[in-house]
Image (tube, rainbow, N blue to C red; front, side, top):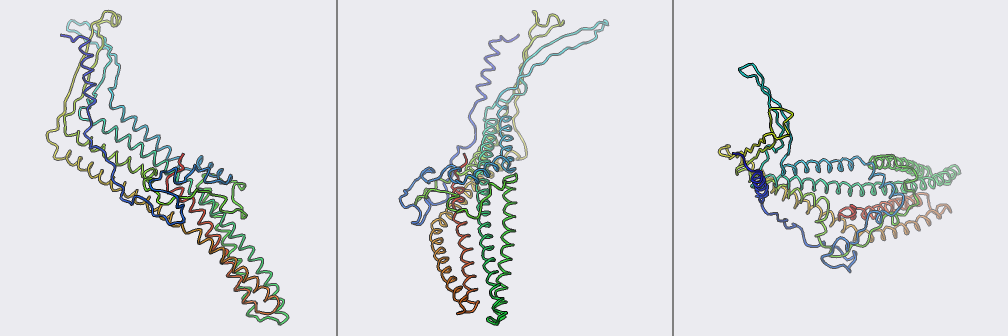
Amino acid sequence: MPVAPASRVAALYCALALAGCASLAPEYQRPEAPVPGHFSTPSQADATGSAGLDRADAGLRPWREVFIDPRLQQVVDLALANNRDLRVAVLNIEKSRAQYRIQGAEQWPSIQAAGGQSAARTTSGGTTRSYSAEVGLSNWELDLFGRVQSLRDEALETFLATAETQRSTRLSLLAEVAGQWLSMAAYQQQSALAQQTLQSQQRSLALTRFRHQEGMVSGVDLASVQASVESARADVASYDTSLAQARNALSLLVGAPVPDALLPVPQDAFDILVALAPIPAHLSSSVLLQRPDVLAAEHNLKAANANIGAARAAFFPSVSLTASTGVGSSSLSALFNGAQRIWSFVPSITVPIFNAGALRAELDVATISRDISVAEYELAIQTAFREVADALDERARIDERLAAQRALVEATQRSHTLADARWREGVDSSLEALSAQRTLYSAQQTLITLMLNEATNRVTLYKVLGDGTD
C-alpha cells in the first residue's frame, strides 16, 4: 500500500531531526598556560604600567605606524604583494576553506534527479517499454552520534589554524623585511665609515712616506701605516660585499627587485626609521594567547579534540537512507500526465561487531594525537614567552649600552685628535696616532652595530607580541 505524501514528508522530517544529535567529542578546555602570569621587565621599561594589560595597553601600533620611513613602507607593500611564501600561505587558506566546505556538505543529503527507459521482448514477440523520472537522495548518513559533525568541526578548526598560520607568515615577513632593510642601512654606514677611515689613513701614509724619505721616521712606522691602509681597504671591500648580499636577500624577501630610490642611505638615523611605544612594566603574559602561532596551535588542538568524537562515534551503529520519488509510465507521452507515482525508501544500518580492535586503536590514536597537540600548544606558549622575555630584557638595557658606547666614541675621538696632532708636530711617533685611530674606528663600528640592534629590537618586539597582522 503506498504511503501518503504527508507521511513521507513527516518521515523525512524525523530523519533530519535525528541527524542533529550531539557530538561525542569531549568538552574542550583550554590548557593552563605553563608560564608566569606576567613578564618581569626591568625598571627601564615604562614603570607606570600595571598588571593585566591588554595588547592596546602594551603600546603596539599598526605596522605603518611602526615602520615610519616612507621608503620602508613601500618596500613592505612590495613584499606583501609579491612574496612567494605569503602567496603559498594564502593559497593554503583557500585550499583548507574548500576542504571545510566539502566536509560540511556531508551533513546534508545529496539530491539527484534521474530519468530512465527500459525495453523488453515478450514471449509473443512484442516489445514492452517503460519510462520513469525520479528525484531522491542516495546513501545519506543520519548523524545520530555526531560523527559527521565531529569531522566537520575538525575541518573547521584545521581551516582556522591555516588562517592563523598565514597571519604568522605575514607577521614574520613584515619583521624580516624591516630587519633586512635596517641591516642594509647599517652596512651602508659601516662601509661609509670604512671608506672615510681609508681616505684618512691614505693621507697619513703619504705624509709618513715623505718623512721616511727625509729620514724623519723609521721603516717600522712606514710599514705600520701601510698595514693599516690595507686593513681599511679590506674592510671597505668586506662591507661592500655584505651590502650587496643584503640587497639580494631583501629582493628575495620582497619577491621582486627593490628600486634604488627605496633603499636606505648612509645619512639615515636609525631612531627615525622604526618607532615603538614604551612597553609597560608587569606586562601580562595573556597577550601571548593572541599570537598567530599560539592561536594556530590551539585550533590544531581543537581539531584533535573533535577527531576524538568521530573516533568514538565509530563504535555505534551507522544509519544511511536512500529514498526517491517520481513517476513512471509505459508511454513517454503519458509520463507526466496522469502517470502512476512510484517511490522507494531504503534505510540501512551498519553495526560494528568484530574488527580485531581497529576501532579501539583508532580511538587511541585520536586520544594520543590530542595529547600531542596539548604539548605542542604549551610549547608554543613557552616559546612565545621566551621570545618576548628576551626582547624585553634586551630592550631594558640597550639604551644604557648605547649611552656608554657614545661616550666611548667621544673619548676615543678626543684621544685620536690629540695623538694625531702630536704626531704631525713630531712630538710622538706615528704608532701612537695609528693606535688611537684604530681604537676610534672600532668604537664607531661598534656604535653602528648597537644602533642597528636597538632598531632591530623594536621590530622584534613588534613581532613577538603578535600584533600588526591587520
